[in-house]
Image 1 (cartoon, rainbow, N blue to C red):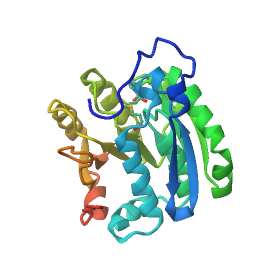
Image 2: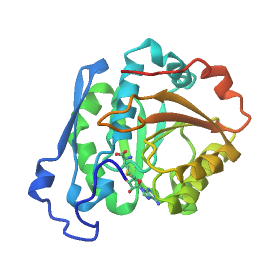
Image 3: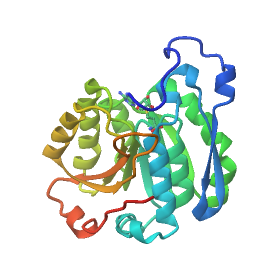
Image 4: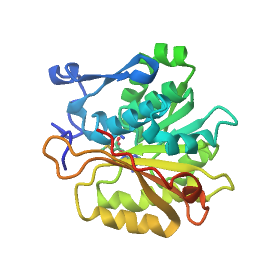
Amino acid sequence: MSGPIPLRSEEQNHQETDLDKKCQQIFHLNSINSTIIIRQLPSQGLSFQLWPAAATLVTLLDRCRAGHPDTSSLSALLEAHQHRRLRILELGSGTGVVGIAAAALLRASVTVTDLPHVLSNMRYNIDANAGILGHCGGDVNSEPLSWGDIGEMETIGRDYDIILASDVVYHDHLYEPLIQTLKFFLLGSEKEMIFFMAHLKRWKKESVFFKKANKFFDVKVVYTESPCDGARVGVKVYVFVKKGSGKLESHVNNINSNLP
Ligand SMILES: C[S@@+](CC[C@H](N)C(=O)[O-])C[C@H]1O[C@@H](n2cnc3c(N)ncnc32)[C@H](O)[C@@H]1O
């Protein structure tokens, strides 16, 4: 799997190592001239690292906030929900960077989620960026959500406008629980939630996930990044909506964002 490689298994040493201490990442959000700082703990496993698709999603939201013309259809999808403060749910948030950036950029109320053992680092990052969140008028809270866990999903509820995720399609045993989770949120209420997923294709088997997803959702690529670091493909951002809702046709027809 390309991208960050876990140096040790998640069960091993949970002490912060020298490498961990060097692994803070700074994201500058140009549209609001603000910076967020994210702590990674590579020694603790893949959930504690930043993945390429996360950076892409942050960049896309930043360009959207800046009113960049090639994100105008994306803005239209977001603006369709501007009747109230935007409520966003993030799945498999890892370090929490996407949710934190989304809250700051969109002045949104964001719930970041992941497996229970991942939450403490996510909470550390939320606290570390409390200043910028307060300044921008966004807020972030964290909840445990293991995909497919009905009890946890019901606790979180469906009162969201948008769901975000980056780099969540990788192990094939996770495809079905992730689809079940998307069905719960996107098909389980009258509300028309939109799921934005940033994904870097690594293996052919991932087509299985998209075939499964296509049975229940209309899925469209809204952004394709140029490949970097000698990779064959770049990160793509997909939009998923309830199948047959017509929402993609009305808002997303002209998106083709081949940003530099
Ligand atoms: C490759 S990492 C991506 C992390 C982050 N979204 C990013 O792009 O930097 C995949 C994330 O999915 C989470 N994940 C894996 N299996 C999960 C499950 N069954 N339920 C919830 N989250 C899960 C992992 O803990 C991890 O944070």
